[in-house]
Image (tube, rainbow, N blue to C red; front, side, top):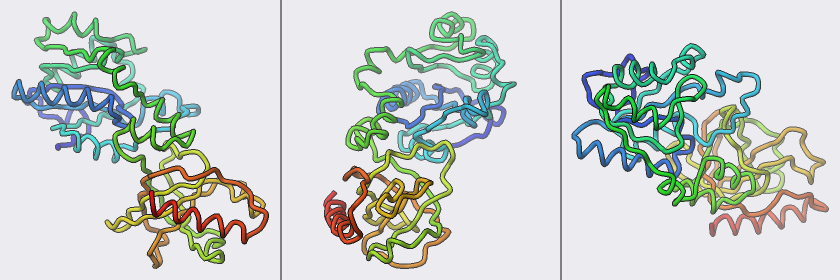
Length: 307
C-alpha cells in the first residue's frame, strides 16, 4: 500500500477508483465499502484509493470544543487500510482554508483533477464540501461532465451490518467488549507509554505497569478490570488491566490505567506498549481490606488467562 501526504503529491496520471471519509474505526460497515471499492478497481484495472484527512475536521473547526473520542489513530487506520487491501491512501491536511471548498470545487479540482478519479464509491449518507452540502445527487449530476462513474453503497447494504462508529463507542463505554469486537471485526486496542506509578501493585504481588501519554483524542473504555493482550517489543503477552481510580486505596483523583503482564519481568519504563482488549471482567469496586483485594485479583488473573 502506498501512502501520500497531500493530494498534490499524488501522481495524477494514475486513474483511481476512489472513496473518501474519516473511516473512524474501519469497522465492518466501512469494510463493505472498501471491499466494493477494491472489487471495482480490479474489474476496471485501476488503483483503489482512499482519501482521508488529518487532523480530524472537528479538531480544526472546533479546536476548543471538538469532543473527539476516536476509535483509531491515523497510524492504526493505515494498518487497517492495508489489511483491507487498499492500493493507495492519500492523507490530506485538513485546514479551515480547505473546508471552504464548495462541492463543485471539491469534486472538480481535488477528486477529478488532483486524484484522476474515474469511479467514486460512496456511502448513501456521505456529505462533503463547504457546510457538507455536497452528496450523492451532486456526484451523479457531475459524473457525465467530468467522465467518472458513481457507485452508491445503499442504506440497506450499510444497515444490514447494523454498525456505526457511534455504536462501537457506546459498546466500549458500557464495557460490552464482545459487541464492540463484533462491530469492529478485530479487538479494540490503544497504545501508551509505561510510566512510574505508586508501586502499590508490587506490594500486592501483582507488579503493574502504569500507562500514560495516549493520543488525546483516543477513546479509552469505561472503568473496570479487563483481560487483555499486550504487545511489547514485538512479543505478545496475556495480561489483565485496571482502568479507574483505585477506590480501595481511598481513590486517585486522576484516572489510572495499569496492566499486570503475566509471565514477564523486566524494566520497561519509557517503552510503548499496545493493549488489545479481550474481555471485560468486572467493575472496579472498593474492597474492605487489602487481603480481599488480593483474593479478587487472583480470581481476575485466572479469568484473564482463560479469556
